[in-house]
Length: 333
Length: 216
Image 1: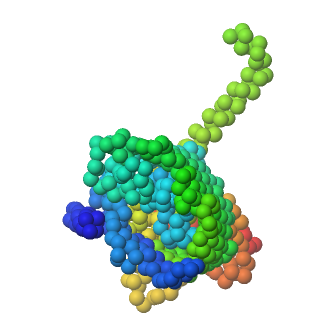
Image 2: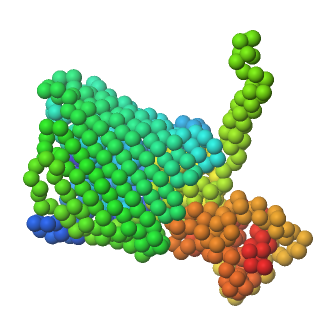
């Protein structure tokens, strides 16, 4: 309830700021966003429709160098409401952009590129909800930019300091988000560096570290690498993340990985397949893998109908029958 | 120094010197080359999502979208400026064209408007139309979508719906008069942006002259 009220109040404040800023309405204030609705038929479960999310994004230039953006998310038919991000960006300097507020932590690729209308495969890959707690957003300051490295090639960087994850010793990282008002004196730091080539290649490396339990002085460090290759409608991408989480009984190592391939056969048809896995040593019910395969149909440049079958597998405990058929209608508007 | 000279005979030193100069010269020349807005658009926007049609937003909206996306994609300042000029300029040209057409309520046919100069396209001037000049412009601005041979198979084509026109198709090109091509290049159509703010009227005519060389 508090998060819901905070989210609505923050978006309202952002909207008022944009509307009341002198000349702001003439500088591209606009509402955009994305939405998706799903039909899920799980093996051995109840099939259901799910109005998974409706995200409204408000963006606009306040002045020449000052830009503001906010995104509010209604999940599962409005059952959950949250503020995905709300930040101000200062863009005066050529290679240094400053972002302050609540923002999506640009660790790796999937955490930023998670909206359903651009992921090409429904659902999150294993490891990118429990190891890297996507969507991981936090409050703080970030510096980011791109440096030329040849014609249409660039080296990009992001450096951030945020409140960081906070929670119980050895706890689930996903439950450690939403540290909106920092509960301790420790801040978390991170960064990502990447090389982007005009030939359709991007390679990046990320790190994020900080204390998640100040009373026991326990820290967590995430390291990751991501890569994508695109050529003539073909795309191959992958990402790996490892969390080293200090706990009273010793360090916990949590690993996640996915690889995804897709091919745009014609402008309205794109089959895709994804493999993902995660493993938590010592936590067998977290030792999972997934293969998703299916097609995306594009009736226009803003929408997609995805028809996928997801095979979930357990590696160190008896197999659970929880495969699913997913039909997803998604739009980015 | 003597030892160095012994280890590296003169010929080898000259080779190393040439290699160093080459390695230094390539990045410097690449850094000095101003990016084309069309190239930035075609090589970056489709990396994460399907390319949005250039007529999806008006000029002020594109201004905000470009700022938002340039931040997210961490474009370089020159890339940001180039894609801004490309998309915002196209939207401004489109608005200007629409305004001109609205003013001429009795003449709704674009080609008639073009012939009267109502949409600001250049009149025919045979002196300007050098296909060789048009070829250079085409390579800088059009190849990303239409491909180097004009077949509509450039690197950005796969992400566009509808796909770029095949300018090497004789049946298609025979049906289209030069003024119509000039109008489309100037004001844009569907996923294609207008180039009124990017190319001069003479350059547009020269591109049209070059397009004709695909189907002699």
